[in-house]
Length: 266
Image (tube, rainbow, N blue to C red; front, side, top):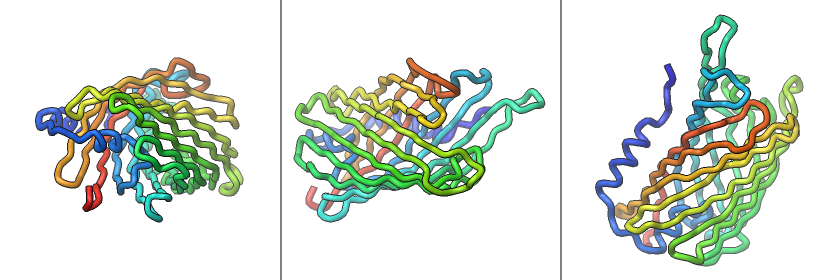
């Protein structure tokens, strides 16, 4: 039986549609800005029922808990991400064997060299720690690299941006393979009014060490609701990989709840 982490995300999303509130234009812009000058707590889930070059009953589920905290008057932003994963693969007995647990935790420190009301850009170091509870859930390697983020909000109707990351191993278990990974994540948001928006945030992943990759496309829907000084951003987003090499996600369902905590002067 496949267990999906975060089934309440979908129920919460549907529930949010029933108590829509008018959101200010600035709130809508900041709700999807990964570099917004606000403390944030995100709960994301990728359910992958279909993998390329894999048996039909293999599946993955990757849940992420992300915490972001601005510092130095918003010029710096620290983001820590913790994955909780399930990997289900066919075993030698003809069934499916699943393994669940903690994955490799990563941290990113962004220096926001552009911080304007309609444009934010940041760059900084990225560190991945080998914290996985099971070998199959992590790399067994310490990894370091960089991340670059840009978010453009010139229009109240359409906002877009991208996240580019690269990481490689430098220490860890000697019997595990080295890592060399790059990723490009375009993201785009169309505001439909009253807090509802269309969205896409697929992640194109390139494993240079193993020469594998997957390039998904995505289109989903989201809802932003402001309650007191907390902004709730709920969304559901199907993604389909148009290019793959190796065992990669072919189809996945990305769901999430983002919480932003406004400052007292907002």
